[in-house]
Every structure is written in structure tokens, then in C-alpha cells.
Image (cartoon, rainbow, N blue to C red; front, side, top):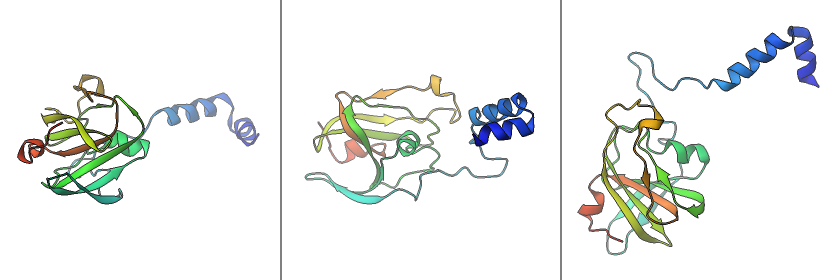
Amino acid sequence: MALRKVLRKSGGLLFAFALVFLAACPPEEKAGPGEKEESPTEGKLPRGALTFEGGPEIQIEIATAPEELRIGLSYREKLCGLCGLYFVFPEEQTQTFWMRRMRFPIDILWLRAGKVAGTSENLPPPKDPNAPEWSLPRYESPVPVRHVLEVPAGFVQKHGLRV
């Protein structure tokens, strides 16, 4: 009812069209000249530690919200050697990842029931970090998983991790 009153007072259709148009156009994510792009998630996610049996303990950030899961490590400049981003999805299913706005190579560990179910290693960032989403390669879990861990490229080989 409040929207109807606003429409009557403001010229009706033109205002409604402008309102719908603005809602359909999200703000641009690019930084201006001389500005540094910041990761919307960096430093804002819950933290924890993850230990591999017979392997290293790493510091992790934990992504659970839909937007956190979508953004992942996008915009970041690097990830420390014993750091990772741990994704917790709502349900176990085949997970598909891309390297949207990534700036460094990573390894992906596909985790199921607390074990490594598969790995995707040395995945390069796109040559153009602003490449359209449709043009990016997709990386898919070999089996349905609920948990995924992104770590710096070479981590899997360095620590001898395997399925």
C-alpha cells in the first residue's frame, strides 16, 4: 500500500520503471583509477584451524553464506603458505568452481566425510581478472562433496596429500 501512494505522488509508471531499473543494475565492482580493489570477504570470515592426518595444520577462513561461497578468494593478492579458505555448502552435491577475479594460482581439495575425495592442482588465475564469467574454465568435484578447501598452488604436492 505504501508503494501505491508513492507511485501516485511521483508520476506512476516512470517512477516504477526507474525503481525496477535501479534494482536490476547492481553497482559496479571495479575500483577507480589509483584505487585498490578490496576483497569483500578478506578479514571478515570466521577463522579456525584444520589439520591433515600426518600433515600440516593450516589456518583457515570459513565461508558459509551464499555470497561468501560465491566470492571465495576473488580480489585477494595472495594466500599464505599454510592458509586456506574452507567452504561449507548447505548440502552434499557436485560442486563447481571458477577462478573469477582471482590473482594467483591455487589448489582445490574436494573433501568428503573428513577425507580428501579429489584434488585440482595448480589452477591458474584467468589472464584477464575481469574476464566475463561465461568465459572462465569450470572445475568440478569428482564426487558429491559438502566441503571444499582452497590453498596456495603446490600445497597438495608439497605436503603429499592424496585421495
